[in-house]
Each structure stands twice: as structure tokens, then as C-alpha cells.
Image (cartoon, rainbow, N blue to C red):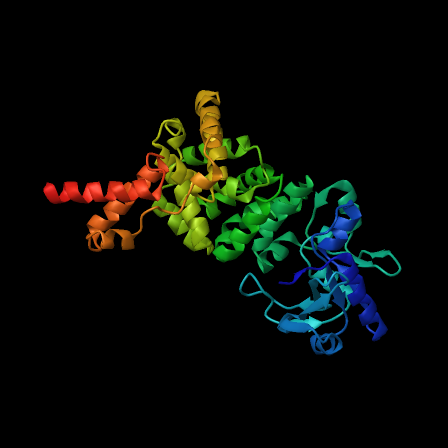
Length: 416
């Protein structure tokens, strides 16, 4: 699977476009991050070459967004790792009637391309050959003063794509910047429009927020600007008590950049059915939905976990989300009791379970019970569960012991 582009890949693409007679510059977020002294997660290239020309120049390329001037170029680096980089043609957008994408685009100049972008700090270009910054929108000044400002009228910018409401919060929180007053006012005015954005795009943006140490600041900003009330109304119905409790849990997390912990802490008090509806609304995976529902079901099990039967404790440990549940338990215990006594007892008990004993292969299978005369059905299922419980409880330690116990149970049932 191809990885995101690194700087070497981006420079290679720029040089090749230049050699073919085209303009080519690094664009957007990677320029912002370089100016901040942060290593970019990805690189984008902007050019005056149109998609068919880019596709012809780069044999390994995909016309995935050619309608909007975007071609994905694939390049194998010196370590034989495939890198992918978006190459976008300078463009000018027309109207946005769906609040997401332009109705049409016209290929244009770097100046016009910068003018159609969202925020000044994302609207700069950089020439990696001459190492020259190209800034038509005042992005460098806003980086220096710590301001998130829209390019042009904020009401117009947000109306073009309402996801920008969340992006404004994410950038301000992540960079510890302030929102420009005009942008903040427009954000408040348009907050309700966030529901016009698909749940999948909202979930993707929340995931980015909750995967960064600034997650708590982002949560607070979403609440302040009335976005969270529209994104997660379930936390504010019939009042905001559920949100206040959730905010307290999120604020106590030891790992603020763990998105699963953030989602778990935020949502774990909501009923399973509500969690299922939220997951569907967001287009979240079944695995994520089931994890959130499992956190809900087990949210208060920290009270008895150290004393629960060993088989049940091991079943908890066997879940992939077990480490996250333990953190959530510690947070809940600290909030409710201001101590970590149960957390310490749970840690000691978990430490005493050998890894190979958490979820061992069953000593007894359905075929074994059939050979002993028990036909498939409900009784077989109950027998298998009971025998495996004893195995997890370590009262049955060998297959021979388990077969003997199975024969005894069948004889007892027949004599009953």
C-alpha cells in the first residue's frame, strides 16, 4: 500500500514538471508546517499543467479527481517504498450549491488558486528549488501573529464548504492560535449548517482532532461555537448534564492524542442504541461501533473487576480494546472516588495472568462432545461454555481432565 509523500518525492515531482516546461510549487498545509518548523505529514504540489498533461508525464498516476484538477502520482523512492502525492492544477472555483464542492472549476493562475483556498495559513506556496515563499494572501503574517483567518469573506468561505467550520476549530486548537474575530462571528452564525455535511466527513474531522494533544481544546472550542451541540445533540438532551460529565472524563485522560480514548470518554455514558445510531450516522466501522458499545456496557465494571470470576476477567482481557477500557476505568474511579485503589488491584490481577492463558484454545470441541454422545444443539453450546469457563478458571488444566469432566457431566445429565 502506498504511503504519503515525503519531501524528496515532492521535490522529484516539482523537478519533473519544471523540466517539462510547467510551473510547479509546493502548496497548502505542507508550506504552513515547514514555516512553523513542523515536519509535514504530507506534501501537495500545485501546477499549471492540466490533468491529462500530468497523467501523460507521470506513467504511474491516477485520474481520481481530474474533474477538479487533481491527479494522484505514485513514485517508488530509493527504499522501494511507494509514495503517493496529489498534483493539483491551479484553479478558480465557481459557485458551491451543495456546500461542499464547486459546481465547476476553471484552470487559472497561482494567485487565483490561492484566493479560492480556505484560510490564509493554508494558502501559501513554496518553491523548493529556489526556496522561495510565495504568499498572495498574508498567510506568513498570520502565522507569525497566531491567527486563523479566512481568505476573503468568512461567510462566503464557510458557505462554500461547511466542513471549514470544523477545520477552523481544528487549526486554531492544534496550533494554539486565535480565530480572527470575523471568522469567529461567522462560525457562530453558520454553526447549525454543519448538519448539512455528511456524517462521514464530520467523523473524519473529529478523528483528526481527537488524534492530537490539543483534543480537549478542540472539544471546548466546538462547544463554545455551538458546533458540538449540532454534531452530538445526544449529549445535550434533555440538558447538558451528559456533556458536562463527558467533558470531565475527556479532560482527565492521560493520553489526549488517543482518538479511541477520546471517543470512548466522550460517548460511553450514552445508551447502546444511541451509540449505534451515532456510529451509523458517521459511517464508522462495525468494529468502532462495537468498541464504543462495549465501553458503555463495561463502564462501571471497575468496581468488581478485581473480584469477578477469573473466566470473566480473562474475557475482558482478551478484547483488543482492553487497554483502553482500563484507562477509562481509571478515569471514572478517580472522578468518583478520588483514588486508584481498584485500578491497582486490577493491574495486579492482570499482571498475574500469563499471556498464553488469556484466551487459550479450548480443550474440548463440539466434535469431542458428539463422539461422547451429545448431539449438536443448545445443550452442547451450554456444555462447551461451562467447560471453557472451567478451563479459563484454571480448574481444568489438561485436555485429559476436561474430557473426564465432560463424561461426568453427561453421565449426571443422563441420570437426572
